[in-house]
Length: 298
Image 1 (tube, rainbow, N blue to C red):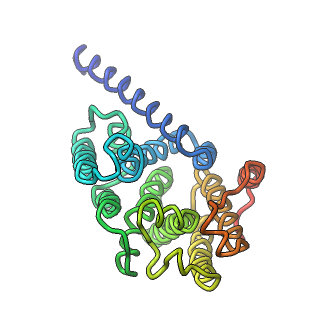
Image 2 (cartoon, one colour; image 1 turned 180 degrees about the vertical axis):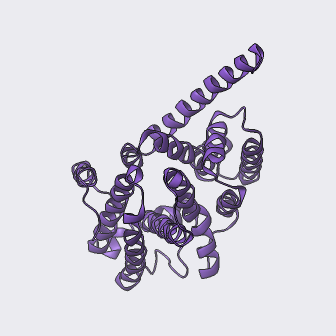
C-alpha cells in the first residue's frame, strides 16, 4: 500500500503531465490547422499521443528553420545546433526518467513510454534536423536518409500510438510500418514541392537531388509527382489494416495530400516555383466529411 507521500507524489506527477499535454495541444493548434483538424478524428487517448509527438517535432523544426533564427539571427547556426543537441539529449533523458522540466519534452516522453517509441526511432529524426543546419544539397542517398528521419519516422511514431489497442501479426506490423513510412514520405515530398522556391531562395537549400528552381520544368515536376503518387498508393493499400480509432484521421490526411499533389500536377512548373499550393478551407472540410462517413482511398 502506497504511503500518503507516495500518493501525493503520484498526484503531483499526474497534474504536471496534464499541464504538459495541454502545452503540446496548444502547439499543434498554433502551427497546423490541417493536421490539427485531422487529429480531431482520432480517439482521444491516441489524439493526445499524436499531439505530443507533433509538439516535439515542431519545436525541433523551429530551432533549425524558424523561431530560433528570429532570436539568434540567420547566421547563428552554431548556437542553433547547440540548442538542438540540448533538446535531443533532454528527450532521451526524459524517455528514461519519465520526467522533464521541458513541458513539451515531458509530454513526448510520456507518449514514448506508453506506446513503445524507442530511441532507435527518435535518433534518425534529430539526425535529419541536424542536416538542415549543415547541408544544402542532397544526392539520392542523402535525400532518402533525410526523408526517412524527417518524415517516415514521424509516421512510425504515430503508428505506435495507433496500434496499441490491437494485436497484429508480425507480417501485419511490417505492412503497417511500410505504409506509415510511405505516407510520411509523401507528406514530406509534397511539402518540398510546395516550398521549392522558398527553400532555395531564402534558405539556399535544395532537397530533391539534381533539382534547381532555375531549371525546374514540367518533365521534372511530373517525375516528382509520379513518385509521390506511388507513395500515396502504397499507403492507401495499408489503411484497411488500421484500427477504426485511427483510420478516419489517416484517411483524411491521405485525401488532403492526394488533393495537394493533384493540384501540383495541374499547376504549370513556372507557376509552382512562385506560389505555394494549398487546398482551400471548403475543400478541407469536404475531405474531413468524407473521412468521417467512412470513405476510403481507392
